[in-house]
Length: 217
Image (cartoon, rainbow, N blue to C red; front, top):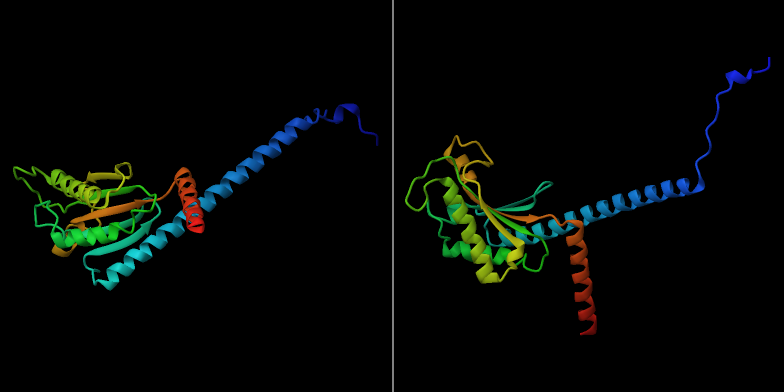
């Protein structure tokens, strides 16, 4: 039985060749950027693991496990936590001389890395109200700022790489329901931020230049 003309749908015109080529180009570019992002993310993860291993070795060799701990998080990067007990007197922000030495030795492993560093002060939920520190906001901020100033003065960090902030009792890592848990919350975190693509490119450039100098030397 012959097919009637009305039963055959009209076909549109085929896409022009330039449109097909443009579509292929967009797909290839998208694939390229996805691969670039994946490679950068993997390289950043490897870099943080390498730094963490160095710090963990130093901590183990000097029996500082109760003072310093490290962990890598997807959101923040490498978090180096210093316990308040080994850094400050209760309700104070002056860093112990012994703690300064530990901070200096650990931070020296970060000087030549390109990552931005965030210093964050934290307290438990016990209120404080002194002329110097009217609340935990001021106490946590002063502690973080003192660590930042020490890094600038002692190790000559680039100020553009550093930030400091105090969070009071509002970012606990444990419930404030026991003395042990409260002690966990009283801390200073030194966070080694993950590299973005531009920072990764700059880092690789610096490594290449350093390698060239070594070969020439």
